[in-house]
Amino acid sequence: MFVLVNLKTYDCDPVAVATAAAEVAERTDARLAVAPPTTAVERVARTGVETWAQEVDPIAAGSNTGHTLAESVADAGAVGTLLNHSERRRTLADIDGGIRAAERAGLETVVCANDPRQVGAAAALGPDAVAVEPPELIGTGTPVSAAEPAIVEDAVSAAAEIDPEVAVLCGAGISTGEDVVAAADLGAEGVLLASGVAKADDPRAALEALVAPL
Ligand code: G3P
Image (cartoon, rainbow, N blue to C red; front, side):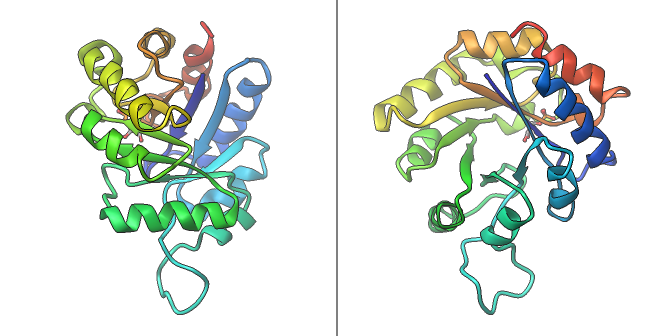
């Protein structure tokens, strides 16, 4: 299972979380990665943890003030990027452009989607993976794998129908090892989560608990 921890802009120390994640990753078969704010990508990558960007822009090098160039986050040490997160929605054309920019820079891609219909549309653009996240469950602590299992199963079918090579992650409210196992049982190849780690009193313990049953 792939456990991808998005730190969003939560008030936590990305390097401390990443250091804990790097240590936890060494003791599990699960794949563990951290997506810090863009400004912390380089410092997080230096901890040795698999590092992702939270977004890249659909641009090439040039006159793009204020944008994030895929090659820049790759140079900083990121190996993948989220795209179209529910808190950073993009047009279809920009998601497509973001995937192409990431490919150009050698970054893996996870495109976020609200529901199985959007998962199908996102899968058609050829990312490495899609993540289904019902926005109403994000940050609630109510795991999508328990509250809306059909959404996860339907997302897995929707992606497989379009492109069986596209992996499906699920997210929203995931915070325990039990949630991760439930996601796997529904056919997800990974989970995308945030508050369960970023807002935890002890992020290291939260990370350990997430991967313990894997
Ligand atoms: O990107 C992860 C996400 O939006 C889910 O957030 O806090 O429900 O784990 P959370």
